[in-house]
Every structure is written in C-alpha cells, then in structure tokens.
Image (cartoon, rainbow, N blue to C red; front, side):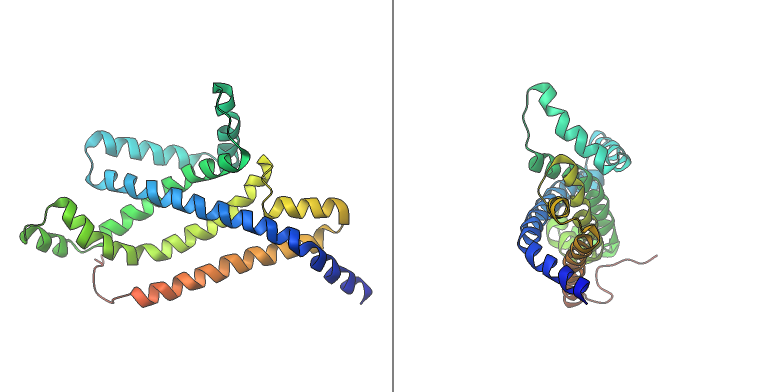
Length: 227
C-alpha cells in the first residue's frame, strides 16, 4: 500500500514535466503530419497525373525514404547539414527527418484514394467539359478525402509514436522528460507506465475522433470503385 501511494505521488509530482514533454510531442506530431500531407498530396498528384520524369522521381523518392530506418534518417538530417555549414536545431531536424518519411507514405495513401474514385464519375466530369485539373479539384479530391481518413488515422498513430525517436537528438519530448525524471527518482517502471498511458490517450482519443468524422462523411456506394 505504501509502495502504491509512493508511486502515485511520484506520478503526481512528475505530471507537470511529463505534460510539458507531451506538448512538445504534440507539436512534433502536428508539424510532421502537415509536412507529410502537404508534400504527399503534391507528390501523389505528380505520380498520377504528372509526366514520366515526375512519376519516376516520386517513385524513387518513395523507395528511398521508405527503406531508411527512421532513426538513421533523423541522424542523417541532424548531422548532415552542419557538414555543409548549415545549422539545424534538434527539433527542426526531427520535423524534417520524420516529415520526409511521412511524405513517402502519405503520397502512397493519397495515390490510393485518388484511384478509388469511380472511373464513371471521372468520365462524366470530362463529358461535362471539365478539364483534368477541375475534375481533380471538384470531383476526385472531395471524395478521396473521405477514403483518406482511415489510413490517415493509422499514419497519425505511427507518427505520434515515432516522435519518441526525437529523444536521440536531445529534443525534450515526452520520453526525454521521462528519462530526466527517472535519473532523479530511480523508478523507471512507474514513469514508463505513465508515459505509456499518455501515448495511449493521445493515440486512442484522436483515432476515435477520426473514426467519428469518417462515419459522418461516409456516403455508402458513392465515389468508391470496388474490384
């Protein structure tokens, strides 16, 4: 009982530091997602509608950045620019490194959602005199967004957990703050359980909200081609 009370008290005293690390973790996650979505959308458009050299470039990019382990990518981004005289902070290196990786996966996700829109709708849009870009903007993109939500939720969960790798660069995110506390309190199990609980809340809470959004936007039988 005394041990349990001591652990609860440790969590209570550690909560401000852990929540401070959680804020950094959330900031990393949001920025990496924005990076991945923005460039992933551009790359997917180029892969589906671009000329051959653009399609080749995107294909090579995806293969490279999906093949390199995230930690190695972070270290390359962090230590590479200084050798060229460019200084980059650990936080920015984490966003850039994981953002490059997220772009490769988001590009694949977007490409799959674009191709999920029924070809009959695209044909109908062309028959109404809509060009390639108008068809993409007003027909494909709105419907692709609904299909995009489930894989995006999965990618969100992956990116959230990958932000813990920023610990290796010295970023004071959730895991790093936990290590600081462990160095003083000498109770790693309690602190790691608290960290795991915070990651669970962030992952489960947001993915559930995205599931609710998916259900609200879902229109059965519209915009998705099966088979």
